[in-house]
Length: 400
Ligand code: HEM
Image 1 (tube, rainbow, N blue to C red):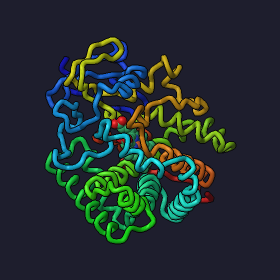
Image 2 (tube, rainbow, N blue to C red; image 1 turned 120 degrees about the vertical axis):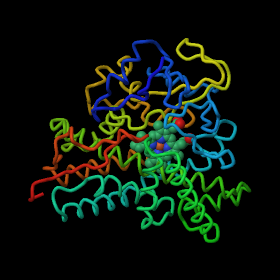
Image 3 (cartoon, protein in one colour; image 1 turned 45 degrees about the vertical axis):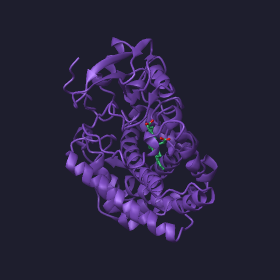
Image 4 (cartoon, rainbow, N blue to C red; image 1 turned 135 degrees about the vertical axis):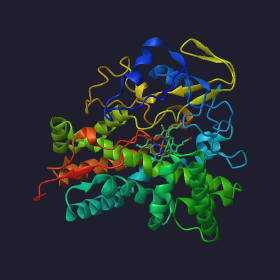
């Protein structure tokens, strides 16, 4: 049962490794020992992960002492308001609905021109700079950071501050002290910002939430600070990693990329396939049972944790035939890269939109784009909760 190396390393950034897939053969759930020394079940099959994410007998409460902790530390304080990610019914539904309207497809469509402008400006700047360029620093990180800042009303010049602390927070190898310091600093940053906006709410997401919550009598400074912080963190680091890894995955498949370039109407399907194939967020969808239940016929007792291996589930051959093959026209939206059930990613429509605009623009404007180092030398984030690349050196022909 002991798994000194659980979770298994990702190895090659672009394939699901045996460590992720093998357990699927051993049954619906297997027990492992986490690095914390606690035992937990792991779920690797698509149907099992979806079943547990819709079973009300499982809780998302990261403060529950039995919640399976992958990163080796429990950070959130008992006295701080729970973030949306950690809430259960009946608290979760109303809190989510309060902000859901900001992320509808229709609402986000209005942001498309501004996202296009941001992407164009960053591509212009990259083309005007030296070759090779680091695509992470030039495009992948600044685009989603700028978009979420403008949406929330967070001053973009503060990006170095919150990006560095987010990186530490999501780094599995950071010490507990480093992680707590990063978490406290981010919270205090957002606390100050929300306080300033309470005095003068502008026309941004935080300002609109302040006005709405005052109008319906639910204004709560700490809860709004938690929500704004979650949106800021989840809104930039995730999409940034999908941009860098997705760019490499596309460049590795020139034939399929050519089809995409010829017909951008195919990009939405391609984005879904890349989300499935790369599954950059794993384990975050883990849960703890709060009553006796079962998953795939295996009894799970109250107090037991289940870790979800979404990369393995997104490579489940019962759902995705030939799962290792990247088929940009597969068009499967039943992947669980955005989770499933009540906590399914709130920002998924924004992430999709950003990815579509970035990929369409990047490959149309720089047809000769290529990775400037051997793929196996790319610095992968195998030390982070959200998978991705630390850097992506790219180059192109001068005429581009
Ligand atoms: C490619 C990019 C992204 C990926 C792969 C991703 C992935 C996920 C996953 C797997 C969950 C489920 C967590 C769980 O069940 O415990 C989640 C939840 C969430 N995501 Fe994302 N996300 C992305 C982008 C974004 C963006 C751009 C935003 C914000 C604008 C965002 C905001 C959130 C929030 C607020 C939740 C919590 C929802 C809830 O608990 O009700 N995400 N995300």
